[in-house]
Image (tube, one colour):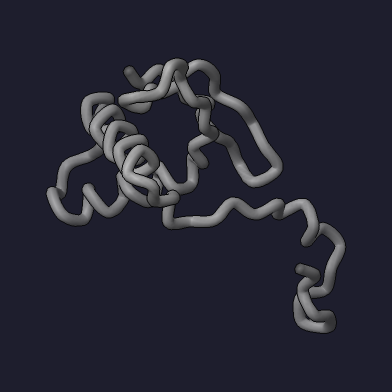
Length: 97
């Protein structure tokens, strides 16, 4: 079972709140999927296939992302709070970590 429960706006852009089950566990897990990660994967598919992403492709990519989580891996693009960069001269200062 994989169900999108909510679409949220975040400082980094947005995310999907997704419930998914893991075989052998009694209840579902919840994860926030960064929309940037989803978009990057869809761009990669467009480069490979030449086709514009459609709803079916979005569903396939989400299933793949959740499959990776079930297998123990994490999404490839780390989430970052870009609001920390507001009013910082990126050429004059070290970017805070």
